[in-house]
Image 1 (spheres, rainbow, N blue to C red):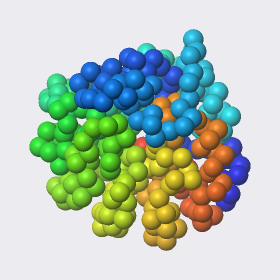
Image 2 (cartoon, rainbow, N blue to C red; image 1 turned 90 degrees about the vertical axis):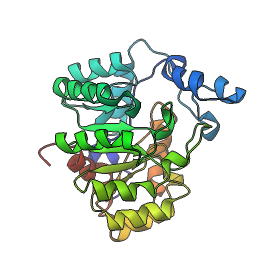
Image 3 (cartoon, helix red, strand yellow; image 1 turned 45 degrees about the vertical axis):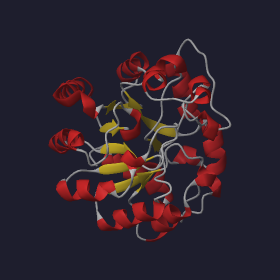
Length: 291
């Protein structure tokens, strides 16, 4: 199967959002965590890494995102309830067949955060939980005790957790996201489904090794333009890891869908891997269509 005609695939995008005011979206990180003046003036905290950050100012962000999805054959988008809550709630209400809800939790909130997660699940039928170890203040390591109530609740509710791993894009410390920390978590929670986000660099080889070891560990391509997908991950998907690679974009946070879809055909995946990567693996992990 070739990615040259993605409209026939019914893509599931596990990281898509809505245009919103970046000053509001990143206010907490700018105020609490960023120290260098250049970062404080960027549109988004990792702008130095991207050369084509989408810049949209629209009255109807949901319609814009939906039209972009239609242009490129994206059938379903996983969206955050916390990044742009007004747009997210509108999308989930008006287009329940096109959008699924994820909840981004701050482990520092303790049981109040767990309560908010449960309430969101009851209201919006969550399909995933997201954690950004580098993006909360104070930072919380992947294997920290404050993370464990989150993992336990995810197992109880049958929800996968998407965790940012690797060197952080924003200019903040990254040790809380060392890939090796997942080893203990997956040992302690054998039923927890984990999806690594944002590359895992420079520990990609270790990320692959851990996927070989742990059957519930997956890798998302979020925040990476396709020409920068790590070769080790591509090789793994083409051999024994076809069921572990999950497509994630980064629109509108850092990448345009035009760029992603223009570059996708250059990714050297085997024909039988494409439908799993773009659709089937996400449908299974997010419990879409009974999978």
